[in-house]
Amino acid sequence: MSENGCQKEFIEYLSQTFGNDFCTKIRVPINACFGERVIYILQDDLVGRRILTSAKTFEALESFASEMAGKTVQISPPVESGRYEPRLVDLPGWEICYDLPLKRFLDNSSPIPEVGSEIMWLLGTFFGSSNK
Image (tube, rainbow, N blue to C red; front, side, top):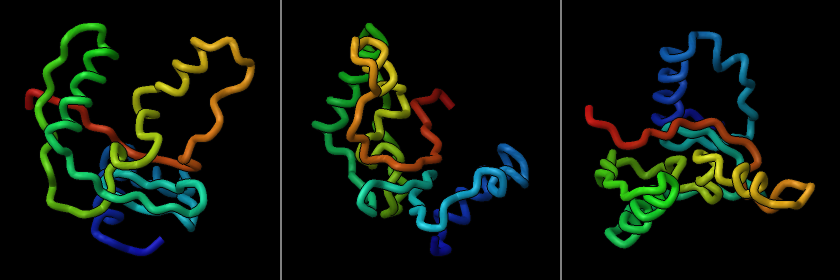
């Protein structure tokens, strides 16, 4: 785990939000990767990459959010920070932040959970749209 700006900012955010000893209690694995507001380990030692949101991708995201809400949802385009590190939504399996794998399992008659998630370990923050 190398020291970088994202790591420092995220650790400071976690400490301010959850208390100074939070990061010592969660025991971040030594091989964890840091992105923008996310710490993760992907299968096969893959490293996430930043994906800039195109108009087509944003429309798909808006459609996805509307489907989840069961009504038309209008969301603002994400604000880019100018950083190159991946965010939670850039990682494969990012839909975990919406509990989608759990919902698919509960809607399924299979006695075993979904296999094949690329995420091995993850701690991140997901900020949805806001009126702030």
